[in-house]
Amino acid sequence: MKNNICYLITLLLVVTTSANAQDERYFRQLLFEYKQRDTFQQKKSGYHFMSKSPLYSLDINGDKIEERIAYEGRDGEIWFSIYNNSGHQIFSYRLDAVGKGASLYRIRVRDISSRTKLLLLYFYQGNHDYLSFKGRSRLYFVTIDDKRLDKINAFKGPTFWEEAKHAQGHYHQRAYNISLKDYNRDGIMEVMVSHHLINTIYMYVDYGRWREI
Image 1 (cartoon, rainbow, N blue to C red):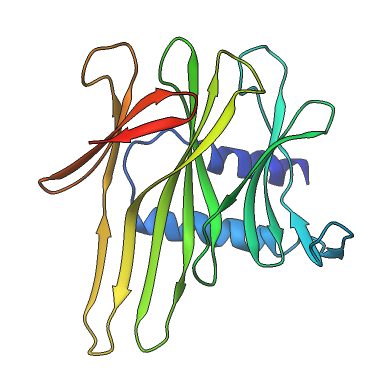
Image 2 (image 1 turned 45 degrees about the vertical axis):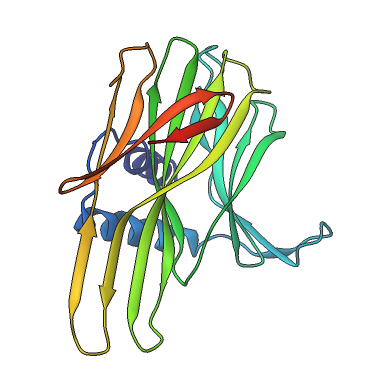
């Protein structure tokens, strides 16, 4: 069991800069299969059925004390959650699933400034195959400011990968390149999502606020 968890941590905390469609499907399938082992149980919290992935250890604020991160299923919804080292939930954010097979399958961790850490969540939103097939992945930006666990915020970012097959048989994949760089040299790294000649840059303003240019 311990080896399985270590293996999945390695899959999640990757540091590559581009999205690869084949890798996405591979990681997505691995985590989906692992997710199937979760035990569903009834809760008295407004949700009928809940599940939770294993807790992955990560020091998200640089204080040398590891927090725990997990993705959770709640009546078909998918949530990203953070727990402190005592096991108490300190942050939870709903991810926008739009079809079957939705799953959080990759997390990338970067310091984007001297005071802000960024968790890039790679989330497959799921697919639908009514008349035609369509699936896509979306980025979410989770920021931790001033090394404080009460300053965690999330932002719904852009689509960065999609796959479609039309009823007429046409099939395509579209992958976007994702890069982090301080383009305006203000000491804060921006996130750029690009496809061919189309570039979209997300600038961090402060305390969970982003500006798209």
